Length: 143
Image (cartoon, rainbow, N blue to C red; front, side, top):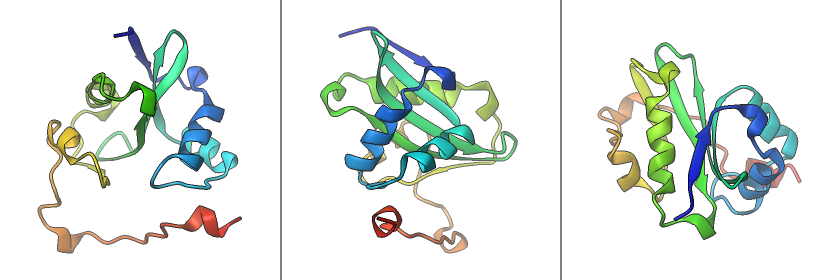
């Protein structure tokens, strides 16, 4: 297994690679424009995971750093899955000093419930209290 490093330094992020994954391989952001990815990164706490300088994983957190955070855009490149990298990435996210003591930390997932459960994430205790505006195919409609 190769040595992986994790950084929250945005200067190290490979934004074109992040855009490529999100816009072509994710299940949640197909067709997302590069400018939208860049704006999202600019306004979020981001985590890149690297092997020999190449970015192999990513996670982004939107937060007020006091009461609330929302974890989004978490991925490990397919050829690097199965090596424990998602767990190491989540370890880094959950340990970040700016994300401690939050009243609510949320995420949405269709495939990784087992991973996130290890970090205390559960289905909403009061789902009737949550509301959303969700446009799943927004980026495809923009083409």
